[in-house]
Length: 218
Image (cartoon, rainbow, N blue to C red; front, top):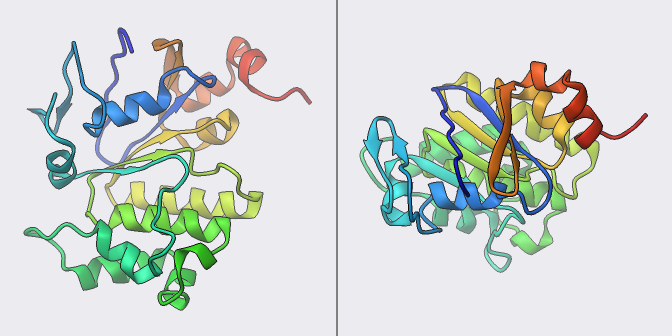
């Protein structure tokens, strides 16, 4: 990653798009403290968090839903939610679980089921719900639509927009560029670790160069 300069505001949806190997996942892992920063600076709510340990970054209010879901397959839905909860001054586990179940009613129905028994879409819902158990003010989602049917993708989209409306900032990494640009307020295009384009989602969606490079021909 070199020369990447981006910012995010409360309740804003920012998309990070680009080809495979562009550095999108690395960017999220760097923000969440999983990758060491050798130069530059990361600030969250005005405070410097560069090289802060990952568990402390999570406690500060940054949630990370990684690519590939990474849920605990041998734990139940309820037990997965417990692993995401961070006790601190704020909402109780019961309140946050109620929120998760309100957003994803199917998880309430299957709370006693092992994660391995869920469909792919339900597992992605569980991954997002587990991230919300930490009560994040910034939620980073890495490829939430990966491998999902269009109907489930639309359900995830609705949840993302609801979260943004509630004041949660969303950073969305997506291979489906048109999907990402349609729902985001602002977007950055990464290539080989550099930011090559940036602007409002609607503006980039209409850009002929971006459409030629990333959007499917019809």
